[in-house]
Image 1 (cartoon, rainbow, N blue to C red):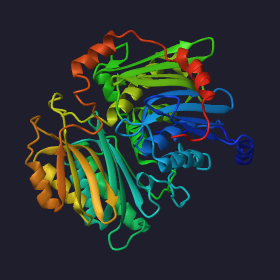
Image 2 (cartoon, rainbow, N blue to C red):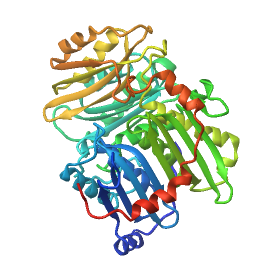
Image 3 (spheres, helix red, strand yellow):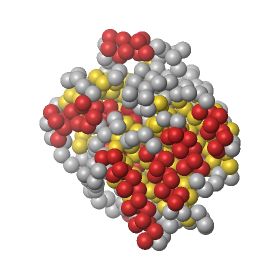
Image 4 (cartoon, rainbow, N blue to C red):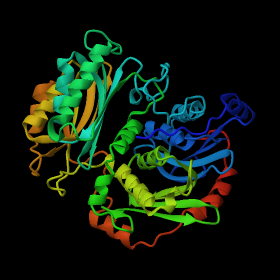
Length: 485
């Protein structure tokens, strides 16, 4: 992926602006009946919108509506949030924590930076497990997906004396990306031996070449990154974008109107203000805003205004954007189509849990909790491989001495996953295992059916959320004071 460096801004000048105009975070429980309203005012900087959204999603908050404005040198964002149960926030400690985390984003480095190495810093945030640990080496890989890939890679790591402390992986359009955090199995800490690291890289590359050959597009990288500078899910988006997983969306017949599997993306130009207006409509789910803002940031588009809302499990997002380097980029039909494909791919990556052989067959989620030990991931993934199952999504980490994780698996032959897999995994892992046929990121069918979703997306006339932006911000900006619960 091409690395883009934004214009240099003297940190001392930026710090002076922040001291003169310090950021303001207001949390209000009175302005809205159903949601807690979080309003952020701050001096503007590149990537700040993604930073704010990242903080809220990492705290497991649901953003149901948002109004964003960052024209000029000032940034103002209004988020309507609830907890996972759909309730307003009432925990005073959580609200203080939100303020602290949003303030802290101003003092952190640029989260969009993509470097081989970064200065190691102590991580004090509440979601440190989602960041790259300073005590582990990060192994990033991407390439063609195939059944048993994770099992083979994790077996190689065990053979080379590496212990996987956490791992997250996605698959989409026959491509796979995964990030392993590994350390020396004999002692905690990053692996610094260059010969050892070279062996790991060579062996993992051999596994990726086993199906597609040396000419197959792939990427393997080992690095020690500073905590707080790299966000795991952000990196997965970057890896899959660099691997061009969005190109397969073109083969799936994204039509000229931007429709693909119930997701609609359109791009038009606002000539009077030289903005490009991007409209997205799709099924709502957790972290949807984070995923779409990620791809806009990684493609070097700046969001000047935006309005987001979800209603009856349908999400509408409207962005007013410009390209950082050349705003005429989107004058090209090919570039507009690329942006449509990339947004579609970003929306699908987290929830692409259908069987590639039989798209009507959804994946089965397997949750495990057991004592953490060397080779655990290799053993569990081998059980899936030996039973003809492919892992389409992975997330595993540690809580104290326990390993806690989720696997979404599909049957390679297109049949239903045999629920006996629960007992087989339990026998191998020695801990508790729970299966769930509904992905944690799916909208429950009791809320809205698939046919109702499709018809509402296609039939409902589009409205412009941008027209509501300023009136909403002006109405809300006068209502904020100290935290009230």
